Image 1: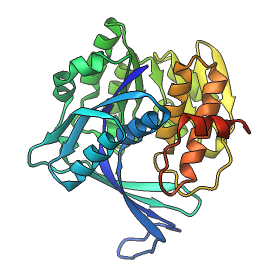
Image 2: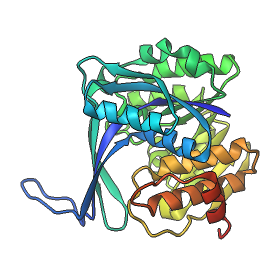
Image 3: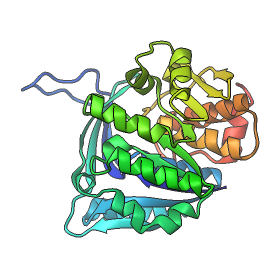
Length: 311
């Protein structure tokens, strides 16, 4: 399976061991920090490559050292980054992530060049996107320049050309306004695989329980809905078949990017022809390995297979 991942690219400044967020005018201390090439698209690409998949990316970075870092790390791991554009004079997006001792996190982002790049960027690299067997659109709410209705039109075109589509929006910092939800529904009608977390699914559907939210999302168009619920595990719904998987036990360093690694594991297992339950288990094992590592975090397929034996 060949993957083309389009979406957000940024730098994460991750501060770990933050017991609580400060009040305005106050300061709190963390215990450790890292500056990482990140964004849902970066994490997903690196996770899929570590598993052994063939991956290309489409997106935008700034004309600065952070953008160069993202491109370098992707290329060093064998990701095809020829369609990762550099915005002349632009800045790379930045996210500050505060991580609690239990791994929970909060984010503050400045989207920089992603505020002006739009769907025309995807159109410029259409040959690469349409040439992949699975086209993934990631972190769209961290890419404010991308109009959801135009993205829906591109997904519709992919489906007409016989390509499969996958979507993971991320959290909407704009608060899930009616116009946003309308554009998202148009995009979901053209989406084959939708992989939100439970909080996002609740915001979109108004349903509190994971199973009810999954059924509501399936009613909007996707053939396969996969919900990630952190310590509560995950579930998948495909053509009326429901599967559940408990979370894999892990000593958590931080959970930033864990959902993207889970997605990569699930998709990789699915492309190997595994049944729905086994795909969830593989994704859970991949995420458990990732959250427990302070460095060299993305697991190989062999490591995930060894980890999932105990699940």
